[in-house]
Amino acid sequence: MQITHPFDYVQDRHASRTAHDLSIIIVSWNVRDLLRACLHSIDAGRGDLNLEVIVVDSASGDGSPEMVRTEFPWVNLMARDENVGFPGGNNVGLAAANGRYLLLLNPDTKIKGNALSKMVAYMEQNPDVGGLGPQLLNDDGSIQPSRNRFPTVATGFFESTWLQPIAPKRILRHYYAQDLPDDETADVDWVKGACLLTRREVVEQIGGMDEAYFMYSEELDWQRRMKDAGWRIIYFPAAQVLHYEGKSSEQAVTARHINFQRAKLRYFRKYHGRLAAGALRIFLLLNYVWQLVLETGKGLAGHKRPLRRQRVKAYWQVIRSGLRPAGY
Image (cartoon, rainbow, N blue to C red; front, top):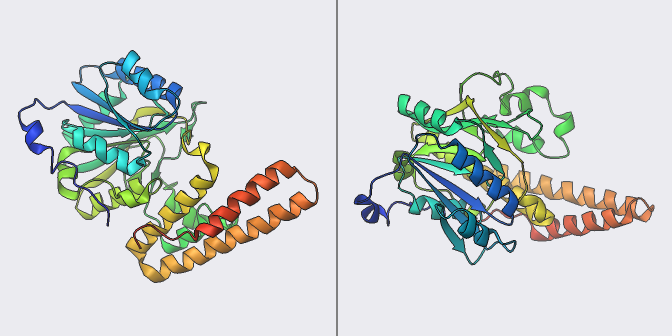
């Protein structure tokens, strides 16, 4: 398993430094304008917190590093020369951070009000909490689903597949924790990684993110390891964060499909075994074959041919990839 322990090689370097209350780690790729807005919201919402902000840029080509250097000199910019992926980038940031609390934050977010202070205060008052996520909001102010229970094998075959519309309601209702009120603090299994607060002791105990995921399911895996180590995970709606979902991943549609499904399969292989993951992999590949046939038929019939060609190409590349989970 490709799981790093970010603090192993930086502990001595940080020993003589005064720790910040909060280290915010942002992994960014080609979302310059959203990143700018995110950093402004952090600056406006820092309150009395002694915080540091670390931006790990994954070889953006849109001028993001130059923007950060010019407009936000108080930010610790760590510009990479290649796309290191979301878990890899966060591990780079975790290794450089010296805060008592560590916040993984997407660049396509905006902090609302004093959300940062509220989250840190809750962690201070509840030392058995290892992970905490705020209430995430869409850009229209509606509530974005952001807390879940761990997926079962049945969930794997229904959630985010062509079977989802006909899934038994109880399966997805349980997975999406829809029985929990949106406006009440609750213990959950995991929260969305767009804004995830943890504490230094947690990372010292369980290590960093599993870099084999590259993108998707890494926060699910990380929080499962937190809970296995005895820490609680909390959904905390008293703090709110605006989230413009998926702005980095939508730039690479085929890669998004492949990364999402391979990450899903890696998770099921790790926690549900070879048989469950193998059956799910075959099901997913057959799903893409069926989608390819449908899109080809629609294209031959003359319906939105450029769109159909794009989808056929994407689905064929997914099928050719084999969707083999990394590390297995």
